[in-house]
Image 1 (cartoon, rainbow, N blue to C red):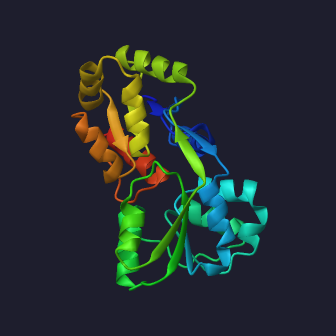
Image 2: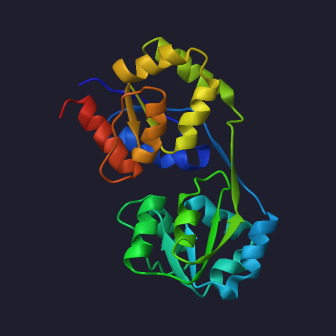
Image 3: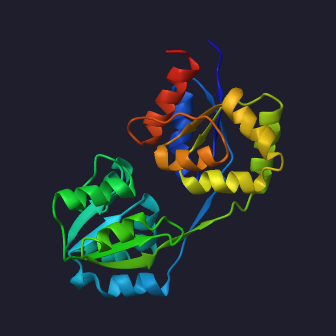
Length: 254
């Protein structure tokens, strides 16, 4: 069985585990981040922290939100006294490592999934803190506000265009040369930024549909691939491991 070369477009600080899984499953990872994450201490984050005692809930959408709060306001997580919702098992694990009790993890690891769980539990008229990047989709905040909740958004990090374009450009050349077997995307921005660097979009889109196995972490990311007319697959559970396991099963014809 051949050893597939798998391109990983995740940010550097989130890519190690993905690379390890690819190696564990018998592949060779190529890391070419199409997204950089930068923790920031903003006025809105300071306001959220200052209103800590008003919170009924706080929602952590990614590990980066926890890292940012720990960096700028280390006492915040230690003294948090409200219910905690997270999106994804990894975010939940890191929250617990910070001593937090996680009260809600939606089965569907998306903003839509979390909103649906809040609807199901009829969580209304609450004050909910949401530290995140402002480039995130409005789905979560709008959905929570539609349930008559007050949502306090704090910008905890910024999602930036990749500062190291060289790796992505090298990846594109390798794709053209037939040196890449699969490519993975874990968020809409990883796709969008990738195509900001691509010059021959039609050629690359065709390669990703016909010659390179393209894998999204879930349907939200997949929708952006559809905008570029790319055929793709995604797992039933939206985690990096499930995505990689599906990739290898498909590649091996299982």
